[in-house]
Image: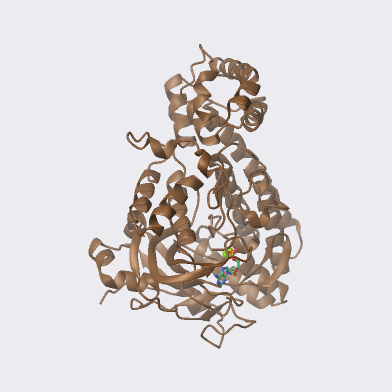
Length: 518
Ligand code: AMP
Ligand code: MG
């Protein structure tokens, strides 16, 4: 029998629901409910992350054992696992939504490994008290997207929850992808997510909304103690220090999203991690042609609340919701306001760092923000691929500012012609800025290559892997994962993965349009 060191502090130290099992209910005065994963017909491991396996101390024989797919498909437990679903609320699309909770996520336990404490959580493992009439399952396309993107984000240097495994359930799941009355049976799958904590902003909002101040305080104390050990022993400013830390890490997370062109798609407060990790990969997307107004989420197509360019403001709005929830723990609003101010300061600094890194500058100067803003405006008007345009700039020769350098980034000849003159002017301006810069050319290129990825898991690349998986060919998942393990490095022979979105993918479901149905 496989023996691991599980130390399930969340369920040991925090109050739980006296009832167990998946019966739908309001759960008051408790932060979790005991619930077993619902077994699936034929679990089959179709992909795993070697890095996450190593973090957890999972060896090759363990990964290859039939028991592994049983455990991570939801049919068996390792000794020490103690499954639960967490209770939380949230603001969805700007409205308070009340109790939400883990409707299809079930945590198996907190594994204490050499690398630290890791909560292992299945997504798509069946009904819980929080499923609200839904089936608790996930389709292969969405689990595959979550698996791939979590790992890709990690390798891109973006704070994120991780993914250990992707297990096909051998069962089908019925989904109406565009809520248009066309339900289809699709293959199901379970992903195992891994993070030091899955506590969300909404975890605090729910007890606060119910006036359960003692419970709120208990959760805050627990969270600080378990998830923020760097804050040290209790002191008068402990809550304030903690909230400020949450604000800072949230700012850094979003700054990374903006750097790499990631759009979360559903920044509801129940999808905001207290650790500032990207969590809950649903209808997320990657910016192809640069467009701050783009959202991949068809469910949000009207209001576009969660479009690419508004993500920093939404993160701040969400932190204000968290501050309101935490206010009973504070004597006044000043410390909370100070934390929110830190969000603004840290984000502003991170944004400057992004400009400096993406343009390969030796230092920050007055005028650099405008230099970047002009480039972005031209990228938008000229319909240029964000990833390819920034990546091409690292080959820029200030002695010969030529627009041809950016040719691979254009989607459309007309748009290219429309901006060519102004882009040439911009390149001359950039050349002037670089001539005035202290960073030597080689160092500039090296710096840019660490900030401007060559490979991102473009929506259409994930869709290609999904289409192949639908035919029973899972090799596309490992191939894409392999590429994404080194997103900043040239990988000869893998040019296919570093190209503009092809025309077929422009308006195709799964590539530019995604819904919450998953
Ligand atoms: P999301 O938009 O994925 O963050 O989901 C919002 C809420 O709906 C969360 O409480 C989820 O657990 C729940 N939910 C989403 N899909 C399902 C499903 N298929 N079964 C049960 N609950 C779900
Ligand atoms: Mg969620």
